Length: 444
Image (cartoon, rainbow, N blue to C red; front, side, top):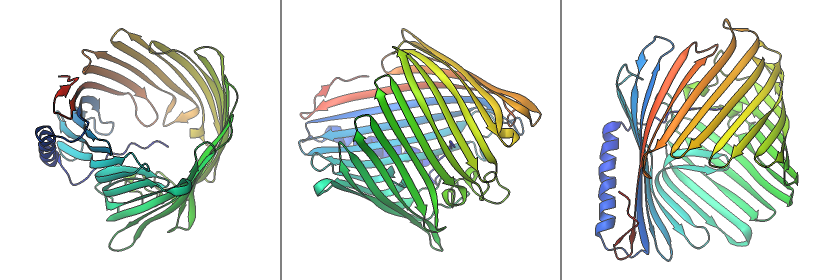
């Protein structure tokens, strides 16, 4: 399941502008004060995005304009690296309101980071995203990671939570960590935990184990299991084994199990809340078993056959099988086709799925076309054939300036005749400075 979540905090657009001001002051100070570091640089990327579409419920005209800014300022010396990272966005609606107001904004991340050349030591302070075992969280606080003796390693983090939806509380404080042991050529195993508290109740308590195994040259296994201490149930098991008997042949085996009541417990976005009668049934469990075979008979051509069995506790069983073929010339051309059959016990899980795509690079121009279709065995909301057609193009005006656009038309059981478009302008600024303060490789 793929989730598109908008990070919403109490920081609106004025807060973003104020933050940008002190960031500019920090950068200026770094260039004015004599540096002891061997080298420093500033990288700034601006993405200006104009979206065009219409709401499916009340036919409102939606033309939001977004501005995304990403900044990194590393200072490198003989002992390690001290860096500053920032990312934020703002939105202004040019027509009808996208949400309950015309403007919005968010500080996605903004933190100082220190990386030592010894023991893989890293310390982060500020708003950041951490991924350590069961923890995949964005928070305001501190993160520490370090390699210990005899192959052991440890990571700790803690701070204030950042809610993903203004209507859902995410707890007040989040903290946790991970302990691991690694033999680089053969295995890595980690044990992790996360806890989120608020003033009134236990909000989240999760533990997990993650593994990577490489017992032989041709075999690799990776996976994780996570447990919910509040509901006393396993949230998820997900494991993959890869076997490469030949350079042009790869075989994968996959196993996963998800318990909705435990996995989606106390989600902080309404789309993933598990309540009786909601989109996600709290009584649902799904066990998935499958695998794939990828074969490259000639250079640049790959053929894949795959199969998955879905064992739903509520929706029943379903089988998905099929294959795809892709042909690619690096940095020049790519094309592919795919055909799959989903054979389930309910109408929504009985269909044929097909896709065709192609991309071509012509000098500084990149072109892409994509078609995705679904043919249901029975009508779903009065529709038997659903499809999406997409086209995209991008042009590199200069080394630092790129313009891109795409248009999508879709007809599905949930969104009838939906047309959307996007225009994106990307500008990248980079400059390097020596320890004496002289500019090196400046780009303006």
